[in-house]
Image (cartoon, rainbow, N blue to C red; front, side):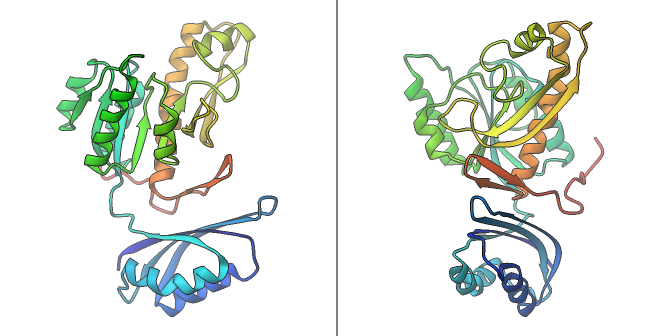
Length: 294
């Protein structure tokens, strides 16, 4: 029996859960895990189920049979195979802590994704990436060649079939066109809480304000710089005795953890866009397990 994930989004109505559960039971499916949320203010219902088909029904057959139920409730739905690894491109500049963390988690199976390429505007991490048998592309970006550079990046996205772009401290602003084409499929890590301390040197700004908590935010990229729907956040405490350099060092760890959690949630279909916000459901049992220890 193979595991299948069903994701559903639709207007709020009574009977949705009963209709979905009844359909799956009639198809000989056994539900293992289920999460749901009704945003009454936005009139949106979200649901994620993990189940097994005890009769070996395929995703295609289930989707065909579910279409009538989905239509009656105005559902957007999809059946996903969690064993199919999502194809991911990582983009990085000169700060390598997030890239190295993702490569380690990928290597031990903690992030079961298929990294199809790493793109950078510098050569700093070519050897690291190539040593992992991952294609590395150095695409220089300047004001003069930005459209050509993005066209080359998107060519790689299309040729590899990448489903997600991860900006692992990629220090270039993406064009509105690229953000629109890849809407909901680009995840960024911002090295401070949003919307506080935007722009350059956020840790220095935090130090000068005497904050007691610093943090990181991972969000979907939109045309509005650093304003995309938030997926994951975390913090670490600091004191008056610590320097801006301490903030940077502590921040690296938080950034790496927050970015990996956001990717983990996205790849397991736990994130739903809800206007300018997200609904993020908890992981199903066993989803954090690694294939090996190190």
